[in-house]
Image (cartoon, rainbow, N blue to C red):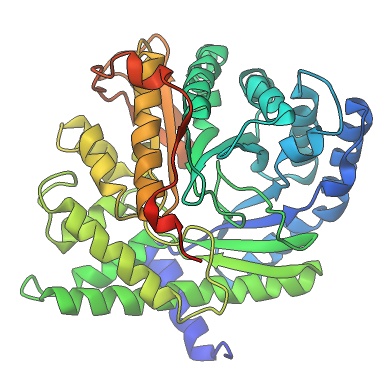
Length: 454
């Protein structure tokens, strides 16, 4: 389907008036050929592979942004889950590989690199164990490296041993970066049904089913969506609201499709997917929570929020899927508390609680994202939070995740302020009645009945 001049002119209007941007252009790079029994040689291979393959990523993205007038806010790289290549060595501490990733990211000028990761939904291998144990040190020793661990899937169920281990690692990572507002935990996410082609951090990896190198694009546009819905009268019914969301999502996704095609051609790599997620920022007017309030919720988190979010998420997918033949990633609506100005305000006034956020994750993309909790929160409470979110993903056959930040030295009402796209996170209360039994039972939560599809 050709991109028309009229579409380009309309897109320019959305950029100027409603802050439309391409949130990220992410190059996925396979590191399978970098495995080596020497961790030093492997780190060198990793650095060389990334810097050679992605050396033109930032210049090409900047050229595209200038030529088409659509900002590309972030340039990123995702790589093969590092635990896969680390199986070739026997070192306990895999931090040198994370440092190689960080140096490569700095050399090519990107903001984040994802893939210090492991997939342990069915069992923890030796390399997986070593990588997981290395996460606190690795994230404390690097600036741009992101880490993710998949502990559950529809077909495997939930690895409850991994849930407890990751709860401990989340706490240790926060402690290791306590002098930097526990920033390490903000770069660590625990997944159920992790996808192999997401361009968004902190959970991006380059899956084993992918080509050697691909370009994945993540669009955004909450401001565009809000402006479109604000034009509707309050008397508009849900069908009219749904149609407006679909039409607007189509327009936003077409901008991403254009950029993905051009980036693929100029970089000489395969075109991957367009992720049409509505990803907010702390900037005024660039808020998913604001969209929900325009739909009719009094304050995000109030009664009706889950209904409004379900409509938004579904219609974003319906509209976006018509604009590209390769929609993928997560694609929907993100609800990261620290990255959404209106969501921050709702949390600070008590309208948005952790329990309500969990309910909202049943109907939207990802899960409990960028949530700060008191620093003295127990490991068992964090494990329970992760287990609940993994269960939602497994039972409903959707991707869910937890990116929670134990704010060491902070209590409810305090803030962690990261600046930029990560914004600031109000420390929210967490239900501490987790007990000690569930988290320590271990073993495996069996795959649900709806996993038997063959």
